[in-house]
Image 1: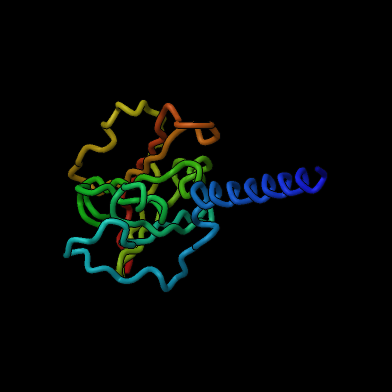
Image 2: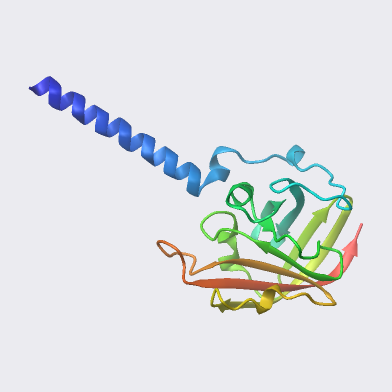
Length: 183
């Protein structure tokens, strides 16, 4: 009888470890496979890019963070990094470039963003510099931040509150305006 209990205990322990690792890889995929500098190819953005392929880098210098941005906002794409919302402008082009990311992984860092912070976008040989002008909390139904504009705007969107169990009820929206295009 004691052997049976010991075997069941070990099975539960191994099952728990497996579930912990499986859950962690879903919530924190960057812990398992962090892309290196060489995983960011120079993309010819005049062509259509595939969903999930890396399109540019987003850096928050004050927060010491650099993130790969992928094309698209599908579940699979967002596991790789924040996603560029299809149909919105690319950074460096007039219009609203929208990037969405998960609050419990890549975009957790947005909780510490401040008005005036710089956001750098590196796309091919270009670096585009944006300055944060606004950070607001909106309902999921409020899509005004996604609207097209005539000026070069960067919009970062994630769920809110940052420390919330389950699907978060609101959205955290960061707006930034282009301040320069440095080579």
